[in-house]
Amino acid sequence: EAGVAQSPRYKIIEKRQSVAFWCNPISGHATLYWYQQILGQGPKLLIQFQNNGVVDDSQLPKDRFSAERLKGVDSTLKIQPAKLEDSAVYLCASSLQPQETQYFGPGTRLLVL
Amino acid sequence: GENVEQHPSTLSVQEGDSAVIKCTYSDSASNYFPWYKQELGKGPQLIIDIRSNVGEKKDQRIAVTLNKTAKHFSLHITETQPEDSAVYFCAASTSGTYKYIFGTGTRLKVLA
Image 1 (cartoon, helix red, strand yellow):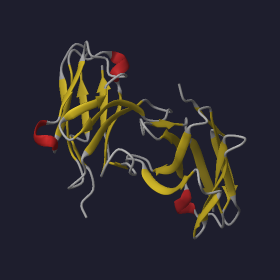
Image 2: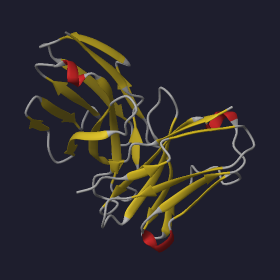
Image 3: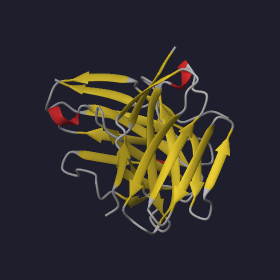
Image 4: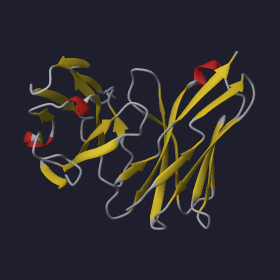
């Protein structure tokens, strides 16, 4: 079974620019998560989707971050405008349902200069 | 809210020795505790998990123990091998929200 796919794997941008990340979850997984992992820390949840609806976005900086999951499958996470402190790895994860185990993708490493 | 503390932050062991990583959680309603291994440049991979109705779970060289009274759980790796070198994260989740709260990670180095 294919795992969670993410692209791009690496991205370098200047502050105030915009960037978008893409995630394709494991087939059949209804729940999708975006995490931010700052160097030396554990992943921190940004947003959780159940099918195409948002379940939890309490930790998402909504003034600059946005995410969508059209048709309940793929998802995109956007940052506009980026700040230096957004430099991190952005991980996508999926699970069959919220109470099931989460499986992570390889992540997108973002560097904001 | 839930908080998960993880110790130690770094751990070096000789090949063949055992390694133990400990986590403490704050929310007594937490009932699911996964452990993830993250290699350089990769996403976290689940290696073992335990639910609150079980005190111990083992899978070959890896075991996890849970003490609900003390609110802590531990990862035990026996007969360590160089390929066990990675960063290990514990997490705690509560039924209802099912939100994972991760520890800060332990960098394990297995010296050949």
